[in-house]
Image (cartoon, rainbow, N blue to C red; front, side):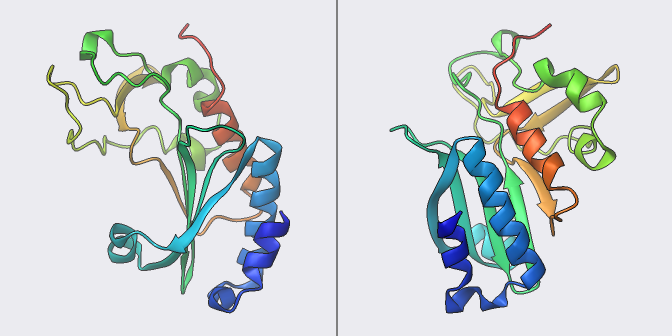
Length: 188
């Protein structure tokens, strides 16, 4: 909250529009309510520089725990911001086979099926999993298979959920998605 306000006053963040600064401060406040905080402010990862022309990044993890798992990236670009949210895959299936895998998304099917279109479409696009994290059993531990509206989909959990130029209007939807996906539920 104060940290984000202070960050936005730094000279290097002069490239951020007032509208996006307002979004970032509000996003940070909402993240704090969920128990997440800024863990890193740095130059953007090389892949983000190359892919989306990002200059800087602000990363979030859960506060107050030793084992830090990334929950959100915000990439600062000269022409806007890019938000990527993650669903934590607790107890990742690194030693499992596809038959033994536990879906992170499936328990949230009802939420997804009734979500606004800009949220639902994140789950109904063709797979983006390149299967580069396969284990000795030939199972990609980042792959998640689930059903939405009676159709089976696959998603790479390592790629997260991307929002180009997020807006204040949709902030409750982004926070709702993050909160929903990171609340433990059992498959129905």
